[in-house]
Image 1 (cartoon, rainbow, N blue to C red):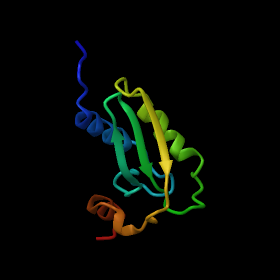
Image 2 (image 1 turned 135 degrees about the vertical axis):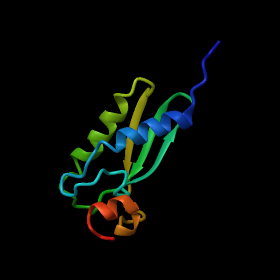
Image 3 (image 1 turned 30 degrees about the horizontal axis):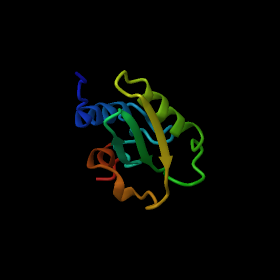
Length: 107
């Protein structure tokens, strides 16, 4: 008998991992910053993360997606992880959580 994976629980675990990754120039994690647009988890525990960067020429454009991929792959339940970068829609400060805005003194 195969065990079924709770994709919602795994998604929540992935979000907890994403909240440990920080933009090096802004003291807020990438999830609260609004850089993560979506997290997809299928029944085979393959993960796809759709994310953006604050700007297309972001200094961490090469390293940040790799860090996200590696940290998500480090979860035992995750079989594979792929990060897709998009700039549609472009990131704006409106995508930041209230928590992030408070942290940055924007409220």
